[in-house]
Length: 414
Image 1 (spheres, one colour):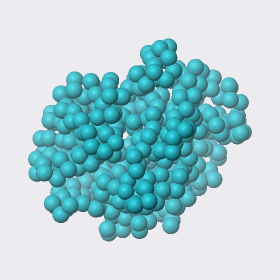
Image 2 (image 1 turned 180 degrees about the horizontal axis):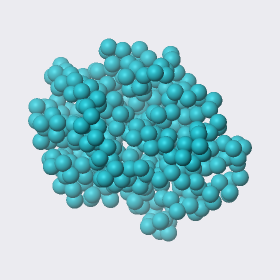
Image 3 (image 1 turned 30 degrees about the vertical axis):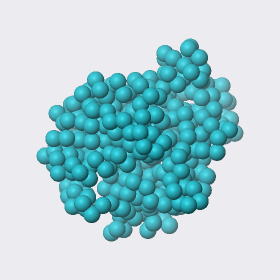
């Protein structure tokens, strides 16, 4: 299984929508085939339309706030005494997370399609918050499906969605987390696709939604590639790009522009949610050898029991608490272009404490998993190695969890 250097990765699928011949596809009800085909045709036109790209870039710059910062974490680097640790601070973006890129593009597509309603899913609440912001910006009525468990643990983002006039629909089925929110969102779209556009919050789902999200979040690596060359004069010989992986939207966006580099020069490291140390449950299908199965319209590595049923996950991070993963990451794993590992809840909390102790940075629990890996490997590497961690979200949404786990001093940190 090889990656073609001269073609965008989101286009390296066969006619049936499978990357590598076995990941992705379109496992959808008959009633959705026409809406999905219409969206595929529309997106193929828009992504090559100069006026649409100009409009996207204009909103990215003047509303989202691109480019976001690229900074060296001097104090953390000096403390660990090894590789240089840098960060792409994507949490600087309007709303506090990378989800704003996908939300903005989907709302622009909805407007071009003549739709007045937009529906989406969310786990950590960032995808929902960003979609509610973009919907309000572009005059669309918005409905967000969110697991009841996540509504309780991500209160700040739920309040933000409601403030933006979005209807937040609690999902009480299954584990009451992201996986169930995505399922309910898709069921709703089946019945309302004539008037409503659906925004899938990550690089998951039927082929077209994977592509739209990947195309949108690639803004992160487009900026980073320029910033690295401005800082170092060229792409360093020893570069490691570390990102958390749940559904996989921020990590794919963080890596995309570097796909054509040899992995010996630019290494991709994806960090999944290993869950609590004393629990057998996790959200790390790539790390722990989960089998291939179908989830939310796509073939992927997914946590399953002996009977092939989707297993419940467990993670302190709502944004990583998903039993499957993007078909793009499954393809990258099998192509051996990216390396995947996992960090436990405890690892992520320790990393959060260390980062906030030494730097004026407040990463959410999702990128704290990525920082945990950076902290682990940096002391073992030489000073000419450049580690860049995508701080893809801020911890404002996690203040209740942090206060409970770490004490009141972390409730309003940074």
